Image (cartoon, rainbow, N blue to C red; front, side, top):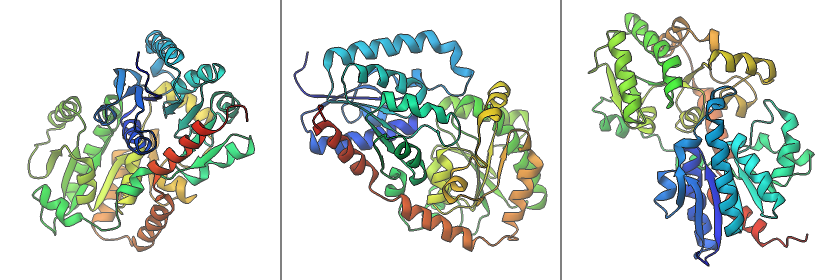
Length: 386
């Protein structure tokens, strides 16, 4: 067993892997001899992180979908609990995945291991009573957005808003032309990015709507070109199968690409799933249409307890509707098609929207990884008797 100090991290999603990699790099400047272990993805592993299992084993979401995986998830939690109980990390950091990480954090905290949670659970949206569980589970909450801190301050949970790493890495220069060159597009092409999500279930529910809207928009705007990013070979195959079902010919007007950032940057308009991609579109200053559908049972449960007026991050960050969002039964091909046509025919003025996007970008540009590492270091160095 190594004598090097250990920092434990569990990330269960691609976005968490990105956050974890930035945090590891920043913590290494403060703890150059530390080892990092737990669960992470390729970005974290590339920095020497020891992932005890594949990160995808934690990539579940919703209220109902994880139920079939419970035995495996309980076994994994037990394995991690035993590992960290033996190695005694300086701190354990759960990155997002709150249903899994908060349970693990609570057990580790009982064992006098310091705990931090990076990415606030959506207490402001639903399950506000969960704040009591959070208080039992974590010594420090790291939030990405300013509006998330109030509930923790009110309940005496140490909290720090660190901003979002995407706001640090994405600059203010518009790189539309260079991104278009990357895909062989001309400067004056009319380009729409279609982004129906990265999970198989999301693609199954959203891609048919987005593709039908795109085909419909071509009737009014035959010059349109559509970029459709994919995040894995499985995603690509799934979208190609939908192309065949809808008799869409992959080629000049419908192009599959493996770079979502580049696709957003190259586009005039983005039609996308609710999630982190909406923040990326905001930071890249791209107008967007946001859509989302959940599994029917999950939506039935969520609709009873979710109490916020918006789901798209740009709207949440602004506290008002900046971009159109269509959820569940409200998401139709006709509505998305009409939005595409309105934008691409120049019938909407987006100057005020772009100014608001820039204001939000500046508010989130806080050097997130360094801020998070400093807060974690302060927790590690705090006398446990205080």
